[in-house]
Structure formats: C-alpha cells, structure tokens
Length: 421
Image 1 (cartoon, helix red, strand yellow):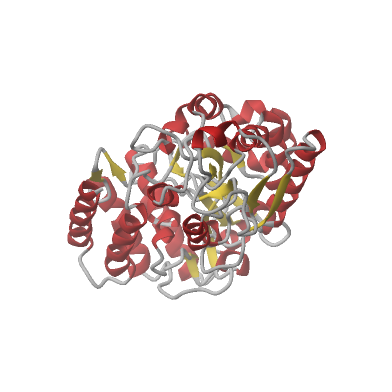
Image 2 (cartoon, rainbow, N blue to C red):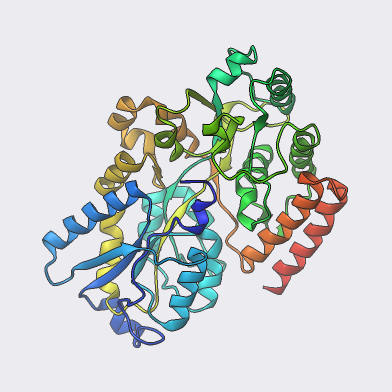
C-alpha cells in the first residue's frame, strides 16, 4: 500500500446495490430504530479485509435476522467519487469504514451522512474526538484508526554514509544528515515525498512538520489559515532547502523509493512496518522541529480513516449496533493485531499492553498516537487543501515563486473560502 492509497483506494467498500433505496431512507425516525440486514463497505487492503471478514462472521453468527453483507470498494477514479456517486444515487451502504475525514464535510453537504452517538464516540476516543466534530456540533464520523506518521530511516544507508546514531531532532540535524547521505552517494536522495500536486500529498510532507512545529495546530484554526504563520513558514523553508539542495526529488517516483533504496528516509505510519519487513533494516524517530522539541511534545498528522453511517440506510438501528460492535475493545484489539494500525481510542498503549510487549516495533507509534492532528473539519475542505498544495508546489517544491508571499496569498484565499462556508 502506498501513501497515496491512504485516500484514493483505502476505503472500506461494497457494492452499489446498498442497504437503502432511492434518495434516502425515507422516515429517518423509523429508520433510526429499524433493524434488519445491512451492507457495509471495507478496504481492499489485505490485512483490513481479513479483519473485516472475521468481524462480519462474528456478528452474523449472533444475529441471524440482522446479517451484514460486506465487500470491498467498487473500482473508481477515487473513493471520494465512488462514495459521492453512491450518495447522489441514494444507494450508499449503511456503513463505510475508512471514510476520509477530508471528505466528511462534502458528504454531509450532500445530505449523505447520519449523525452518530456523541457519547459513545467521546467515551471511546477521549479528547481526540473533538477534532472530528462537525461545525454544527454533531459527529458524522466515528474516529476509528490512525497511522501517526513519523520518520523511518534506513540503517544500512545511514551507516554507509558514516551515520551510526542519527540525530534528526532539528531541521539543522536533518539537513546535515541529508547532505552527508547524498554527498557520500549512500542514496540518491535523503527523502522522497511525492512531489505531485494532489491535495492530499501535503499530509506527508508539510503537515506533519507543521503539526510538530505549532504544537498541534490544524491547517485552519478559529476560521483562519495557520500555514502562513512564522511556524508554517519555517516548515516550508525547511522543505524548500531540501528541494533546492537536491536532497529531495522534484520528479515523480513510480515505485517505493524507500524500499528501493533510492531514498534513505520516508514519512510514513505504522501500516508500513509489515511492508518493510525483510526489505529494509529500519529505525524510526519523530518528525523534526526547528528547535528540537522532545519526543513527548511532538505532534504529527494522524492519517486517520473513520467510520460513517450513510443516509440511504434503512436499518439504522442495526447499523448503529454494528458500529459499536466493530469498534469495541475486543474488535479494536483484533484490528490492531491484524494491521498494526492504531485504534483511535483512549490509552491504546495500556489497553493493549500485551500486544505492544510482543510487538515492540509499534510502541513508539502507540505513544505518538496520543498526539495526532487531523485535517480540519470545515466546509470546502478539499478545495482548501488544493489551494494550499498549489502554492506549496509552485514555491516550495519547484521554486517558481517566493515561499513567504506564496503562502500569504494562499492563506488569504483560504480565509475567503472559510468565510464563504
């Protein structure tokens, strides 16, 4: 699974012959209490498919009259388009696991989502749940699982460059190590974030470092863009140096540059551990900050995917029960064991202490999971991200515009988009 797939194809899915009919579920009050068969969509990622199948089997064994039918997402240009089309057609499934938080405002605007049980969400996820609340004060997504991104590094490449105990806490540290790697030809590039212009690519270069530098601020906070702040410009300046000094590439890479050894580092979450097994001798550290904050203070991007209930669902009573069953302590534990991804619930490290004792590679991610930053839950979310990415690409990646003025201009556009919502 590549990072880009986190948004494009990483959505729990199923057939477009869904659990409702027409443009909605009719009487919402009746639907909220109704129980019976439902359909859900789940991911095409092999580990998640395996988890989903056992979850469905466990539910169906106990609920002969309320069976779940599940399948992977239908093929389409992107999961957002597939889901949006299903909402428009009125045949979305009852539940979609791995709903992208960036798309929730769009689906809500379409009238495609059902508000969920706030008390259950807040009890399960704790304070982190607040990031997923919509502007109307309701939850249209259940915070399900995250992949807090950190810096993976290739130990063999670092050793080849003469770096045995890498210090990557500050921008200066990171740049010094990067220059040593490239100068020694231990790897062609120090790191290789995707230089393409899709709106979500900023989640794996700028945004994690922005979260760390600002102490956990989202791209938009209190109705204003935050990326043109002094902290945001420090982050952008760091990445501009990486590109300008050819420590990161401006060209699109078709494989996995980290696995291939083309790059010495990668910005990625714990899902990748299984991918790297037997291929890369890796280490992991938090993302850098300008001042070198201690690891216990570092925030990063969550790379979360969530569960939403869709308004075409007739049997919402069953769907609500399934939602809680699938995100119970027991099922979250099975999901963690199957995928290595972090359930978005309180005290993951202590709740599943046995798992982390047996799988120490995941301990750092469990700690980091308590300090994650989500995309802002605001209308026009995707347009806002694309506006930022356009400015970032031109100025930071390709050096066609001044970084500071480009971010200032983009921030003004974003502020207008927020006002229009």
